Length: 234
Image (cartoon, rainbow, N blue to C red; front, side, top):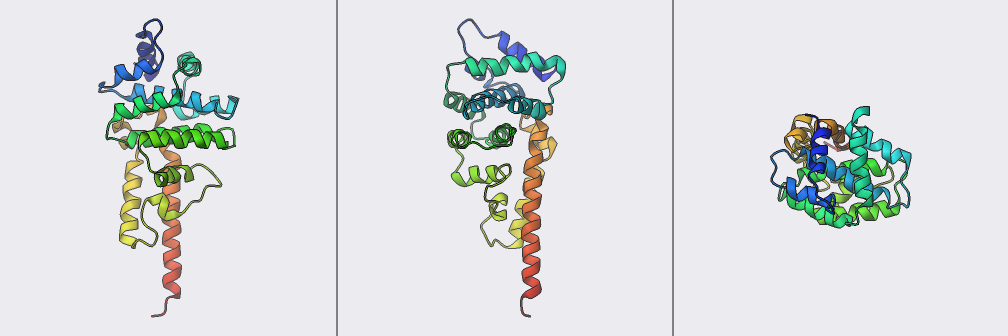
């Protein structure tokens, strides 16, 4: 059964008057959290798409890019998107329910944030209201400002990309620590690791931007250290 069929089953279980947020409570203890993860990205993405005042065709297309939605599954994905847009439940309630679902395992929440950034940048513009939205969601998830900035730097062209910050190590950390952080982040970006965290097969693409940023940060630090060593007196 495809992820979209499982999502359709989850939505069909809603009783009259229940909103989309009720789905998260029912899936909270489910061993298969990929359904909840997918609904969360679409639901929060739909709320965020309104943050800049309008929903563009590019933002809708971004869902297809993240999840590789087959034509026959588009009506099911569209139903989730429309339910979220029409639901009176605030985005903060969605975010809290998702945070509760993953408890102390915040790696899937980081994956989810990256999916939202992908959607936010789909129209080629990062609107100030989208930044406010995403920063508030990150705060509900328990992310520090530094961690939010690090995720943002992977996607927003004009964001300050301090390579040490991207790797999550202190500026000037020794190369052994830098290398260890780089290898850990590369390992965590592997598709098998994402699947283990409950990210559906359709959304493994989420790690691509992270991996590009992580490798670039490593290259920048490595090159800077090499150049410094070349000019350091013996």
